[in-house]
Amino acid sequence: MTDLIKPMAEFSVEGPLKSISFDIGSYNVVISESIVVQWIVMLVLGIVFFILGRNLKVRSTSRRQMAAEYLVNFFNNMVRDTMGEKYRKYTPYIGGLFCFSILSSLMGLFGFRCPTSDLSVIAAWGITTFVLTLRNKLKTGGIKGYLKGFIEPMPFMLPFNIIGDIANPVSQTLRHFANILAGSVIGGLIYFALGQVANGLASIGVPAVCSLYFDLFSAFIQAYIFCTLTMAYVSMAECGDD
Image (cartoon, rainbow, N blue to C red; front, side, top):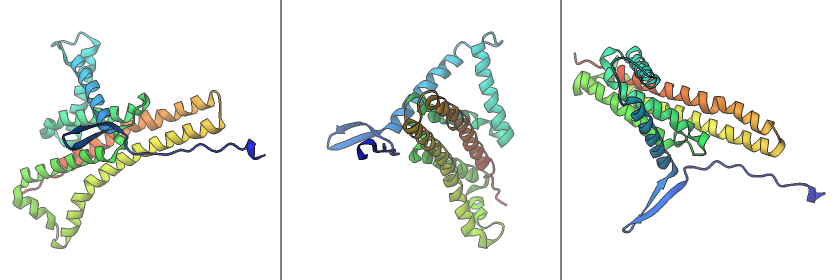
C-alpha cells in the first residue's frame, strides 16, 4: 500500500538567483539575476524607442510614427493632468519608469524572474521618488520653508510629519513589490497544483487565464499606480517660505 503513495513535490520561492560571479583582485563580484534582467529590459526598450523615434516627419505618414506620437501624448497628458503644466519636464522620467516597470513585470512570461519581485529594485525607485520630493520641497520653499513644514499646522505634528515623509516611499515600494511578488507566488502555486492533480487542457488553460490578470493586468495597474503616486508626492511637495 505504501508503495502506491507518491511523495508530494515541493514548491519553494527563492530570492534573486546568482547569475554571474567573477573575481576582481581579491574581491568576488556577484551580479544577481534581477540586475541581468534589468539590463535586458533596458536593451529591449532602447531598441523599441530607437525604432519608434527615427526618421520622424512633420506629418505622420506611418503607423510607427503614429504609435510614437500616441505614447508621447499619453505620458504628456498623464503628467499634465496629475502634476500640472509646469511639471511637464517630468514626462520623460514618468514615461520611462512606466514602460520599465511594465516590461520588468512581464519578463516572467519569457522565463525570467521579474525584477519587480525583487524588493531592492522597487526600493531604489521609492528612494528616487523620495529624493525628487525632497528636491521639490527645497526648491519651492528653501531650507527654511522645508523645516517649517514639519511643524505645520501645529508644533506637536513634528514627529507625525517626519514619519509621513518616510512612510510615503516605504508604502509605495511595498505596495508595488508585494503585488507583483504575490502574483508570482500565486501563479507558481497554480502551476504546481495543476501539475499534481490535472492533465490536458486544464493544466494549460487555467494558468493562461490567470496570467491575463497576474501578469498583464497587474503589470499595467501597478506601473500606473506607482507612477501616479510618484507624480502626486512630487507635485504636492511644494512648500512656501512665508
